[in-house]
Amino acid sequence: MDKSIGYDRPLYILPFDHRGSFEKGLFGFKGELSDEQTARIADAKRVVYEGLLKAIDDGAPKDRAALLVDEQFGRTILDDAHNRELTTACPTEKSGQDEFDFEYGEAFAEHIEAMNPTFCKVLVRYNPDGEAGLNARQKEKLRHLSEYLSHTGRLFMFELLVPAETAQLEKVGGDKVRYDQELRPGLMVRAILDLQDASIEADVWKVEGLDRAEDAARIVEVARHGGREQVGCIILGRGEDEAHVKAWLRTAASVPGFTGFAVGHTSFWDALKGWLAGDLSRADASLQIARHYRSWVDLFAVGQGG
Image: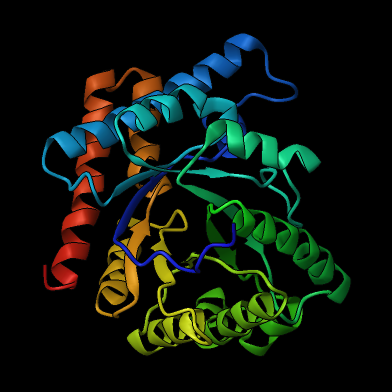
């Protein structure tokens, strides 16, 4: 069955589908993981999940709360979240790749069906001025996924990153802040249009932070054009500090069509580091994560006038 396009209900996501950064950055593991190492990473992700549950117990709206976690380390978390009737998302991309590819190759559909998340999520680095062959290869794989999700009635969450090309950075004197402010918003618009023209239809676009409300409004406009009125947009934290995250959340919340956020690293990284170092108990680490998540929820709701 082909489904209609779009999901415009509020989505307050705690994402912890990071894989490479947990393996190498958090634990310092290299090479193929042992069963014990895999279990340690899975347990760290369980601490993050416990933080989300604490936040919900403390008043975060369950019908807006969502989690994004991977199959490799989060299978039991996804099972538990299903039992609690929480909104879930699970990634299909191979972690840490400049070019999109499926984590499980052509078996991607079997894994989606086994995990049965509310959303199938992809993270894609796509610059419309990037290498043409790279963009074409990515679009072909993503179109294949989009068609599968449409035919099976599943929801598609598209995380779009637009890394700067060398020539683009040169235009702004190598200043990445200027790139983010002056060039990236327009490139994001072109990227979404490119992907839509390639028959890649996201229900939710998960996009990098924007400093100006007019840029956020333009993203909503292109995401929803051509009969896509129910498509939602959410803002991501991109691992930035709290000041950046709060500014981006305020901007997004002020723009109709932005329905929520996905802030992961800024929510949990320091808490997990403290727990692993023995400076925080497990309960205190999950409480710190819960408080961060609640602060994003409250800020976004206030920004929307709620």
